[in-house]
Image 1 (tube, one colour):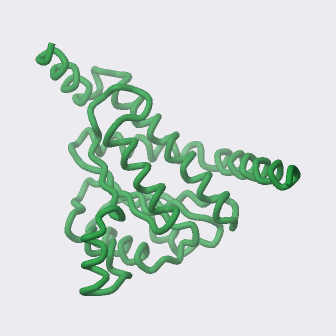
Image 2 (image 1 turned 180 degrees about the vertical axis):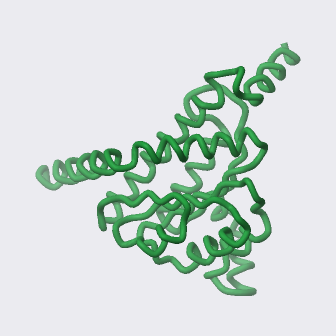
Length: 208
């Protein structure tokens, strides 16, 4: 059992090292993209299935609430949390439409989408990505080694070098945390470059 525990941690560390060595520049680019979208008054839309649904909800919460610093909430929506919406779409249309119909309704040009699929083959994810592309919305894909089709449909693809679902998901949430940290730093470490921090400071002054 000790060997299995050590191997799980070692595998996770090794995959993350290989992943970041390939994607460090893209992580910076995507963080700037999201920060620019927030600064323009747009929103982040996140969704996934199963464990990736939990990751999507986690990511949205980090932006809406806070990550490492006190700052204004940032507009992020998770599409897999409203059971009434999901079950009504699945019941009236098809389960493959649960994200596509929401993207069609809620997403606007300038918004950013983070779509998460460890396999890259989830029909409801792929349909939503197709809708987003037709609307001209930038798509960030988080997937694993078998997600080539999904990655090719996206504008920015992060492909974890593994086909082991737990290791892929562990890398995805680490990536999300790093992006959250960078977005906060871009928007709120340089007040002169971000209207959002000035708004936050004005609110605190008026309360005081």
